[in-house]
Amino acid sequence: MAMADDRLLWWNGALVPWDTASVHVTSETALRGLNIFEGLRAYWRPSEECYAIVALDEHLDRLENSARLLHFPIADLRRSLERGVRELLLAIPSPSGLYLRPTIYVDAGGYEIDPKLISVGAFISWRRAEARRDRSLRCGISSWRHIPPESLPSLAKIGASYTAFRFARLEAVSKGFDEAILLNSKGEITETPGGSIFVLNGRTFTTPCLDAGILPSITRRIVLEFILPELGYAVEERPLTPEQLRNSDAAMIVGTLDEISAMISIDGDGFRGPDSAASSIAEVAQLYHSLCNGTRPSGLMQLVMVEPRV
Image (cartoon, rainbow, N blue to C red; front, side):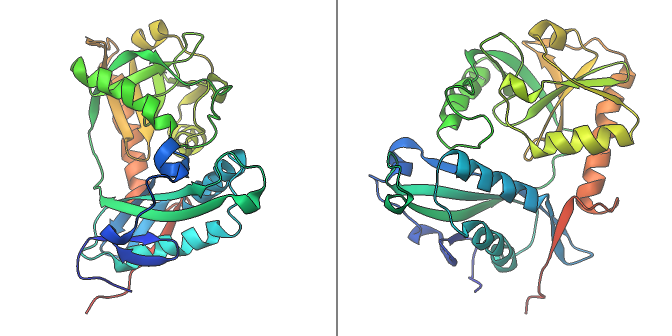
């Protein structure tokens, strides 16, 4: 099913006009933000007439795990969403880089235990989002603390938790920064509202461990397990303090939307590492983009062939 313009999305099994997809104002997702979601990048490869999606299966696996953590009865909704991603990509006119957001939401029964009393739905929204190259961010340490995993599962992408992230980002923008860095209750570095943090010293990259209360980011895993070893860098997962971040040679933020973005300052102070440190961040970004655009073949990318339009 194709439509004449960009105002369409996938909603509960079908492609529909954007304005027809709605839930009631008293639904659990409207009242309490009771939904889970994933963010997907689809890179358009014109020479192959296809989209390359970063780790589609892994993202949908995490969505399914989020559903289990929040006790959502989703049955075979995962497979339906996978079909929906492909149907949506085939229907969107004028192919370009895209950001897709598969979401599972609760209509009713948020406090129920019996899954038969809980009603869920799903949609996939999207927007155009081309690759971001040579992106740099001015960051600030937020006065807002990261939600502890004892209060809300950090292993799940929960819509409601991004309300807390919103406060941190608004504070950062009000101070003239591009992004916020959140600390946990121990005063350790966790993540930004949208990405994982890596710091560089010499030839070693360090990133907070999952025990810090961070999301198990898929881009973080790709950087940790594939990109950095491929480029010959040592990797450490351990707690990081704000002082260690400030005193590092360089730092970067990695995530689906951020891709690989250089961090150029903390609370207004730039990094004092050698020029080679900034070049290292650029090297990581270059390899990541080569995986996404197909100049470096990789099993990380899942291709969706697009039928010729007439």
